[in-house]
Image (cartoon, rainbow, N blue to C red):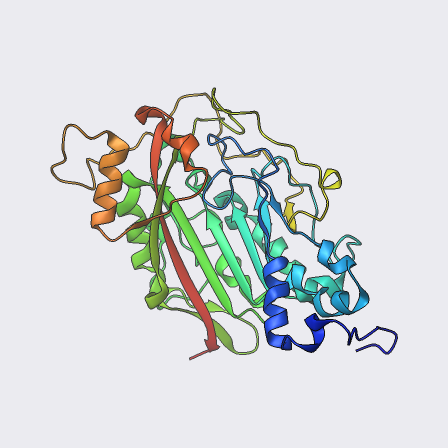
Length: 370
C-alpha cells in the first residue's frame, strides 16, 4: 500500500474484518444491477429480455469515502462486472463508447481489469467484418471470458422465419449446404478463426435464442457444436464442454418487423438515461459505430413472431393459449424458464402478442491443442 495512504487503523472495517470478507462486501456493493430509478424498457423492444429490463447501474460512491477504500476497490467496477457491447439495437440509454487502444474513455489499464465481455451480435455483424475488427481490439488487454448472444431478431431474415443457419467454420454468410464436418478446419476468414487474436481467453459462451417453434432447427445446430474446436494463440484451443450446456426459456412480447423501440400502449415510453443525472455510473457498455437500429431485411410491420407449437408438441389442451402450450412442452423437455421482476408487463399482453423464446447456452474452455 502507498505510504501516503492512511491505513485507517482506528476503523473496525480494516482492523476487525478479515481482508477476504471485506473484499466480498466491497464486491457486493460494486456489483451492477438494474436501476429501479430508471424508466423501464418497452417489453416490445429488441433489447428487452431477462436481466435487461432497465438501465444497469454501478454505485461508485464507495470509492469516494477515503483513500484506503479507493486503493482496495478501484479495480472492482471493471473486474467483477460484465462489459456489454451491442452490435446493434442497443437500449436507448447506451452511449457509443468504443473500445480501442488509444481511447481516452477506457484506458489500457482499465481494459486490463476487464474479465468478462458480453456481446449482443447480429449474425450479419458476426459473419461479416464486424467481429474480425472487434477481436483485433484485444491485442494488448484481453478478457478471460467472452459471451456472444444471438437473439431471435439477430438471425438472418428472422422476419420471414427463414431457416436457421450457423457454422463458425464457414467464411461469410453460413449456408447449410456448406456445413463443415467435425474434422474440417476453420476457413481462414471465418469468424470462428478470429479468437486466436484474443490472447489469454479462457472461456467462450454462445447464447443462441429463437422462438419455440424453431426448437428443432436450433437443436440441430447445437448437435454440431462438439465439432467446433476454436483455435487460439499459443498452441491452445477452445474445446466444447457439453456438460455445461443449458437450455432456458422466457415469455416475452412478439417482435414486429421494423419494431425497434416499439412501445406497448400501457407502458411508458422508453428511457434515455443520462449518467450525469444520477450519482454513480452505469455499467460499461458500447455500441458499434454503425446505426444502432441497423438490421437485416427490416421492412414492413407484419408481426411474424407468433409462437406455434405444432412442430414441437403432441396433444395439448384446447383451453390453453399458444404461449402457455409452448411453455409447457418446453418445460417437459427440460427447459428451465426465467422468471424476472418485470414479467408483469408481459403478462398483461394478450396471448397473440406474446412469444415463447428458447435459448441454448454453449460453453467452450481453453485447453492445449490436440
